Structures are given as C-alpha cells and as structure tokens.
Length: 208
Image (tube, rainbow, N blue to C red; front, side, top):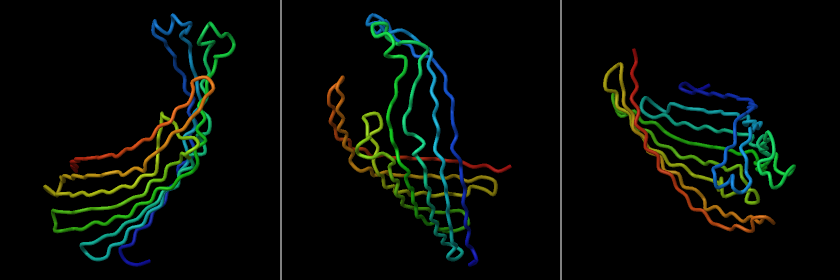
C-alpha cells in the first residue's frame, strides 16, 4: 500500500423499532365523529455499508473519496394500528391506516480534497452525489424527494495546540420533483417541487 493511504469500511444492520403513542383529535374533529385512540407501529430503519479512502499527495495535499449504499427496501409499508375505531361513524373500518413507500436502495458518493496552507490554516472542498430512494411512482407530497448534488467548502484555524475553529458552507442542488397522485376518496393531486439547501456550520474543538 502506498505511503499516506488510509482505507476504511463499516456496516450497520437494520434496526426494528416498536413504537407506541396516542392519536388525539381537536374539538372540531370530535364533532365529526373522531375519537382519541392509542396507536402503535413497527418501523425498520435500513442497513447501510460505508467505505472510504484518502491519499496524502504530499505534505500539503490530501484527496479523499467515499461511498455509502443504503438498503431503503426495509421501508416498504408503514402501518399504524389503533386501539379502536378512530371514527364512530364508520365502525370496524378505521382501526388502522398505512402509507405505502416502496423505497429502493440508493447510493451516496463524494470526492474531496484538503490543503494544509501552514501549521495553522487548513482548507477543504468537495462535491457529492446523493441518490434518492424514491421513484416517481411513489413520490408523495409528504416527502417530494429527488436526486441531489452537494458542493462544500470549509476552513479550519488552529488557535492553539489545544483548540481550533472550523467554518463550513454547503449548497445542495436538488432535481425538480413531480408528484401525480389519484385517490378515489380525496381526488387527484399534481404538483412540481423545486428545492435547494444552504448549510453553514461553525465548530470549535478543544482538547484537554
């Protein structure tokens, strides 16, 4: 292995969560026959595999790359079970509800570089591609997700041997997302979504 090369990998398994709580309605909903109930659900968060590599080019430059595969297939149908009917006007027909997700596995890739200007200043930059697990068919108004591209810049300053300060900025470019759903009870909903995200992070690290 070349000098200055570091390689890492990790795996996190699925985790099943058993959730319990209460569903409560306001007075307007109660007038329409809705009643408070207990609620429970089972959610399995996905397994994922992460791997990365970094290479020191010289004393000042380091390049890095990593990838992550997430098995979102574990989120297929989210079902809520209630302690009884949530609406007394429709007995036996509303003691549970479910949302169909049918998500698929997805990938995240990133590439970056680090430049050590001197013993105090370090500069960083990188790009990433973040694939959505949601297909056009199952995209909803709750989560109008789409593929995204990340662009990040940052700098660190070593204040002392025991302290440094870092500032970072990320802009996320998201593809336009289209939602087109038809339901026999609530009708048809069509919409186009445009989104972008700006993240500014400030961090201070102290060593004792």
